[in-house]
Image (cartoon, rainbow, N blue to C red; front, side, top):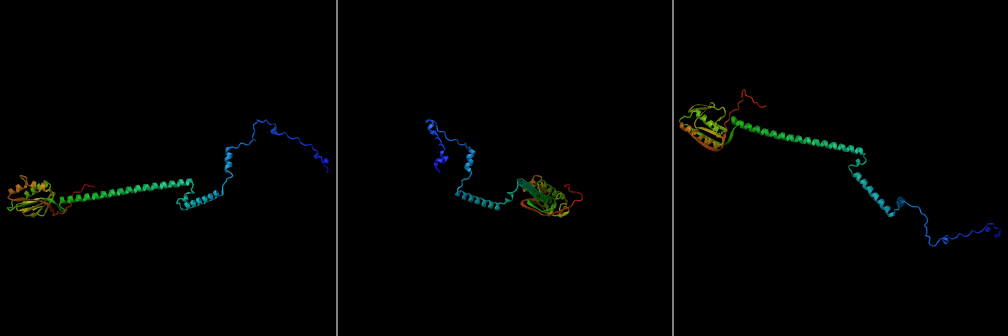
Length: 276
């Protein structure tokens, strides 16, 4: 087909558009193309997602995850309180309250047992002390009553009466003088002198509590020698009185006097102890 007969080839040509730069003034500023404003949040999201992880970082993360998982399993398997890990808060509070209550009960029980121990110790000490005091009191009363033997420092008084002039009252005066000087135990010729002891008879025929004794009369006396001997030797005392009766009295001090003559314990017929 001839080019003259093609209608499209006959269309008039478009006029050339004038160059925009040619018509612009040489001093006008260049305006940049308009761009959308991006906020800070959008920039942060754009930096985080999608994540840019290298292969080395991924391998390290996997290794750390495996290590942490292994440690968690090990701690959970060896921990005593593993049963409490999955407990609710209400259950934990209840368990804690029960532990506190048990602790308080144990503390109360400890205090009670401590109090019982202290009471038993005090009771034991008091009972032991009371027993010791009772034994000591019994010993003292036994010495005074003449039912137990006694020993200790004292004197020995020996009265010789060759003429038989010493009467019973002179021997009783001697006992009274010794008691006044602090004598604690007295024995005369094997007879224990007690509170109700009596002397009877005339010179040469003396009896102590109904038992006959003969001269020389030997007094074993337990007490403080420094008090007993001067009491017998005072002017007008026992020694001078006996010398007037043609008798002689010899006093000897000793660190160990034994009074072992005993009296049978007598039960009173009517008197009773007033102690509860």
